[in-house]
Length: 145
Image (cartoon, rainbow, N blue to C red):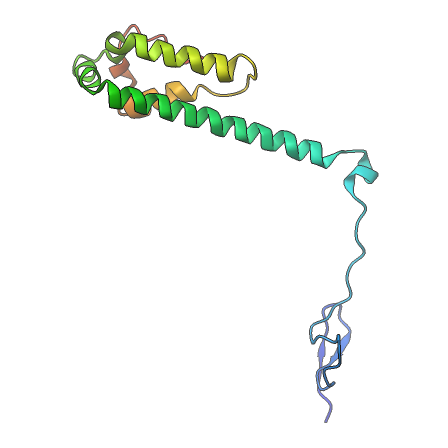
């Protein structure tokens, strides 16, 4: 009795057939390879991919920069951070440090590129102010972007 099964394209497969060199049980016919999009639509996918990758890397660098700057403030200015939280005026107490970080962030990520959110503001609120923007104080100018 001969056994058979249905192949991947609907044709019969002979599963009793001995394995020959180069024969695989689930071998399917391959679909035709589509033309690259460059030929079909005139798009250069590599440059689009590279632009997307460059943008993602820029966002990643900006986010890391913000985290590092806020961590440095938190580490090296710990007593001032504590007193600023207690007084609900982190910005007033840490103004020179926060302004230096804001200026460096603006120069590195906001001015030349645009489209990058103010990750430094987000990190200041998240880490220094412990998710309470009121702790930054009334004199804090707000996000850059």
